[in-house]
Length: 395
Image (tube, rainbow, N blue to C red):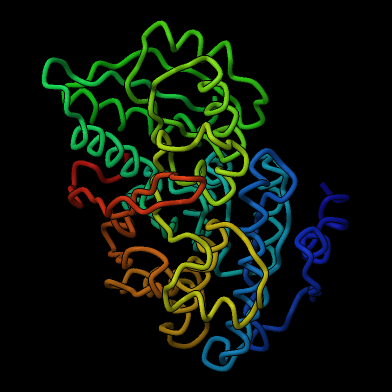
């Protein structure tokens, strides 16, 4: 781990992202506000992690160009952890020792592994994991995320299937495809509960890893059940493998995909196999969307192109910035938590539905856009949401 800390710092991260930045060590309090960063730019989720990490670096620059936090600049200490939980724990401890009030984190497995430390140490942790197990402040008071939760995404997906189902002779048949990892597994109970409530016939689960290069055996097994719809809870590369193998096998199944599995790269990776059969849960706008925040992003990165995952960390950084500006005096974890919990319908410049946090509910919103792929292009279908029901809080 010492080697990782010495060799994979923000300079190396910046090199991987093609951005020239530098990092300072322990900064004097009052001169700069340190923010920890735990990113995956080399591990199994790096295809979506690299644009996310790039946004952290870009947002730091934007924040400091616009006055920092009430005149004090921030310094993002960004490190790659390769999607390895022990590395994330080690980085967390380093950041704690540095006295950071906030960490921009990444995955579901590592965020859940850290949640007891986060609560004990009272450090605000804004993760790229939108795991609903993190949105009940009665259990995880210092955990936040800024996109519609995975569980609410899968509930909305089941609701969409019901809304679009036209065969009155039988209920739709659905299955769930996901990696054997907390990120993939955690929202499945919510999806199955919603599917059962809606009267769907549920088939056997299929496990497809994040680094899968073939899903033929799983899809052949799935073909025996012959589902009308399948949920995919992976990332873009593994989703592309599933779609291409489904096309090769002649499956008629349509696929509905969580927010890390469908983006601007999916049509390129899956080709014709993605057209008219893939639907994505977009809790963030596509990159470069015609919304006010895009102009702000372009003011920092110029004409660089990323995927929509860039927008996720941009929003996380902007939400953090807004809360920091609301803190009176020195920024501490408890003060920052309290400030975040004052956000009501916070405008993200069109990148996501407005965000609200309260002391009793850390769900940012329960609304997202559904997209499909037509003629190789992302195509908006509709906005969809579920009630902010108490029964859904925390799972």
